[in-house]
Length: 187
Image (cartoon, rainbow, N blue to C red; front, side, top):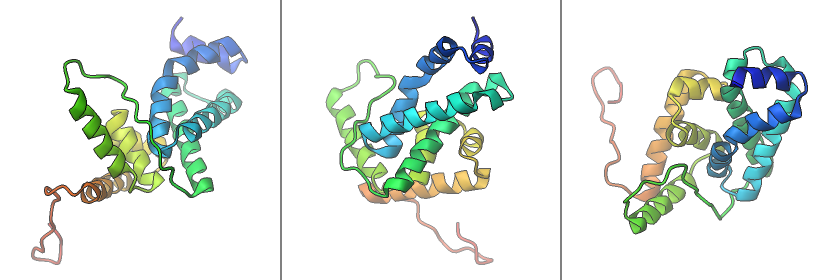
């Protein structure tokens, strides 16, 4: 049975169809929620809130082919809502990779993870969501903007500012500098 049929059955109230749809995406969405919320328990809450919202509003979904993007948007928004309510940042992060590269040096992988965690710690939830969706889930920026309900230009500027903030946070030397050019613009 294809996804469209499962969505149609779930819209009719079929719990098993919804469970199948939800099960297909839960690992990736949980990993994204952990990166945004920086706390495994809060991430589970965010994913659960998103799935509850999805079940309740599923009959209003107009295009069954957009189910994945719609579900991802609901869960990301649930995570951002949790961060806004909590207004604190957890100290502990469990960064679980989706795909583990074979043959990679394990110690450098751990060092890279620590570096990413340190850099993400300095971002606001809205900025962190753009970084996670774009780099961790591999979504193109126009889709990130649609998922978050923001203009494409806002998504681009958040990503740009996030990367600058992350570079400064980890102390890399390759932070682009701005220089003044004629007309009062920055290069």
